[in-house]
Length: 426
Ligand code: AMP
Ligand code: GLY
Image (cartoon, rainbow, N blue to C red; front, top):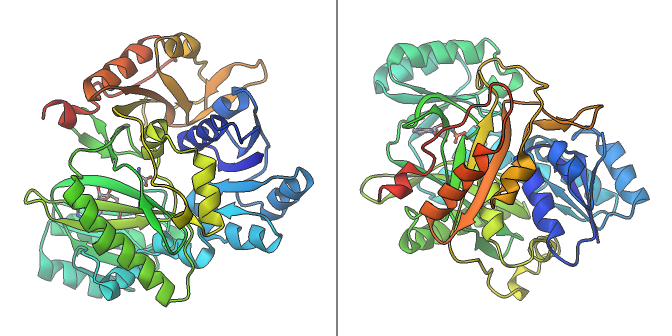
């Protein structure tokens, strides 16, 4: 079968790579894809925008695409699933109504409160004065969130009341456009974050392996927030006891609450959790899609063919599949970023040594890369490559990832040297 993957990041390269490892999948088409998907065997890129629904649907119909897998949240929130389903296509990813669980933090918070899902105490505001007086009364630290999609930049963890009030000002002044019409202000939680992604067909819910990512740019988890500088799975902090509670107290309650609103949620439901030092947890956010870079470490460990899982989900027969199986061991990815990221950086730097790195045992998922006119792979974004390895344990997986990384070069390349420090020092 032929599968179309929407998106152009490391997550989508990993999805395409995993799909192609199944004998049932003959070809993958990425829209628009990146340098990695352009150069992978049996994979090709089609230069359409992720929100060109008419173009994507025409392409999928003309080329007999059996399945469309949507990577990013933006097309889901804009209703790509509804649109393509109306044209008779099979699509993995929730409808516009379901994607609201990520696209509106205020809506998601209300759903969590109604459903009794453990989450941080919060209040929603539509104007600055009330928001500021709430912050004044609560004190700091406190978290200020723009309601809508803001590419991961709409959350400010404020250490002082002043910082929170400045954040309220900038959001209401329109820094995030319509994403900032509402503000959610919530209590600041402490602990370790973990991502639990589950695949669901709206009836059956099957969690994937829990993963952790490193969000900060600097070693020791310091400095500015990024889209993620590395990740690993399975995260030991999400013990079987915690995973059982996540299933009943988070995932099942969320799906039931969505169903009560008439939403038949099919796709990935991603719960971002904060696990406190005493072992309790609260939900920080829901996402309506695979995580990036979590997917790049979860999929290499998946033994069940991915397209089988996805098709069963789309066709609402997940309960008929045997339990998901996983390879033993651990998986880790280290992100190679452009110098200057998450601030300004240059693009177009030639990348060398990927094949040499892969010869040393890593799989390199491309994120911000493209193929230039001379057929060279060049940098095209802040996070450039996800250098990924599987091993018997975290020590091995991380050591292999860093050995593979030694072969890879581009001008200004930056990576953190301490990915996985929490799991190595346990
Ligand atoms: P979100 O998009 O809501 O997950 O927020 C992005 C990031 O902000 C999270 O991954 C956390 O690192 C941080 N964050 C969000 N909410 C809170 C909170 N209530 N307490 C502490 N940190 C938070
Ligand atoms: N790794 C965070 C996310 O995908 O939202």
